[in-house]
Image 1 (cartoon, rainbow, N blue to C red):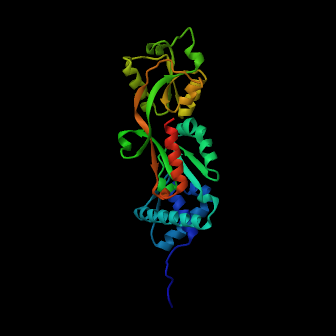
Image 2 (image 1 turned 45 degrees about the horizontal axis):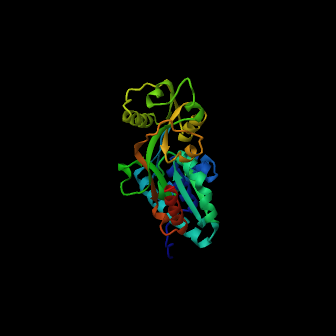
Image 3 (image 1 turned 120 degrees about the horizontal axis):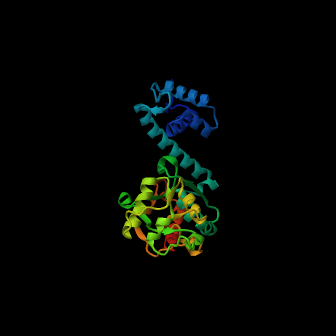
Length: 301
C-alpha cells in the first residue's frame, strides 16, 4: 500500500500553532481564531504529538518556543503566507486589491490620514489598511506591504527617505499671545510648560537639541507634561496646555491654518527622519507601487 505523498498535520493545527507562536499566548491566539483557550491548547498538544516534538515551553507567566518550535514556526509561517497569497490570487477577490501600511500613530493621524482621500479618489477599488503602532512590525510575517519608519538617519541607511525632520516649538495662538507670559524669544520658554512624549529620554533629547542651538542648554521650564502618543501631545498644544516641540513637516497643515503657531522662526534639523520600506511580498503589486509613488509626491508638498 502506497503511503500519502505529503506527511502533513491538519491545517487547523498549523493555524493554531502559527497564531500562538506569533502572539506567544494561547489566549491571544484563541481570540484571533475565535476559539477558546482550551481549544487552542488541545490543538497545540495534538500537533506536538503528531510531530513527536515539544514546540512550546509552558511557564507560569510566559509561553516560549523551544528550539524545535522556532524552526517549525519559521517554516510554517512562510508556507501559510505563500498559500494565502496564492489563494487570494486565484479567488480574484477585492481582497487582492489591498495596500497594508504600518506606521506610527502620530504620522498616521497628523500626516497620512488627512491626505488619504486624494489617493482613494484617484484609485477607486483599492482598500488601504493602516496599522498604527510604535512597535516595529515584521512585514513578511504580518502580511504588511509598506512601512513608514520613524528612525535615526544612520539606522535606515539604504532605505528610501520620505522626508527628513526638523523640530521647532509650537503652541496655540492664544498661548503665544498671552501678555503675562510673552513668547518673544526662546528664553521666554522658562515661563511655560513644555510637552513631552512618553519616550521621555528621546523627547528631552530633542528639546535639548533645540535649546542648545539657541544657547539655552540649562533652561528650566515652569513645568512639564508627558503623553503616551504624539498626536495627544499635539492636541494638548492645540488646547493651550503648553508648548510642544513640533515635528516638521508633520505639523505643516496645522501651522498653515493657524491651529498652531511657531513663536520662533528658527527650526533645528532632527537626527531622525521618515523612511519608506517595502516588504518582499509586495514586489510586483501594482497598487502598492502606485501608493509608493503617491506618498513620495505628497512628501514634496
